[in-house]
Amino acid sequence: GGARAKLLEGKWTKESEVGQDEAMQQLGLNVVFRKAANLLSKLEIRTSPDLQIITKGALIVQIKEKYQYDGTAAKNARRDKRWGSHTGKVVTASESKVVLDIKWGEPHGGQLIETFSVNKEGKLVQTSEIKVNKDARSGQAGKWFTYKSVFKRA
Image (spheres, rainbow, N blue to C red):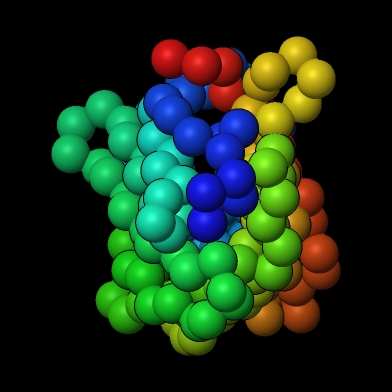
């Protein structure tokens, strides 16, 4: 796994984000949780021997995930802190980009295709394409929705 995701390695601080709050509303998350999630501004990525993604914020909120590069499905705690786990796997991994495919069941089940990539300015861009089975706001079937965060090196 040496060169894989090498450019993603390190500690990052969120600079901007577009659309995350709407995605969380689709998941039926309340305003308190959404405010806490918006404080998750620090990201640490470790790329060896496997891929580890640690998201930290104010207070005690921390999300820690681990994935194998060979595409083996990995179980991690749900990011929305609801009971149960999600199953994710690495779809592709290159020196400057990793794509994860994450699925979780009810309550508020869905799928997330998440891309971490380093752009030519050296910023880390996290693109999240999410589809909930049922949009919590309308009760209708969810549609694919994309949100994005940009990080600079910490």
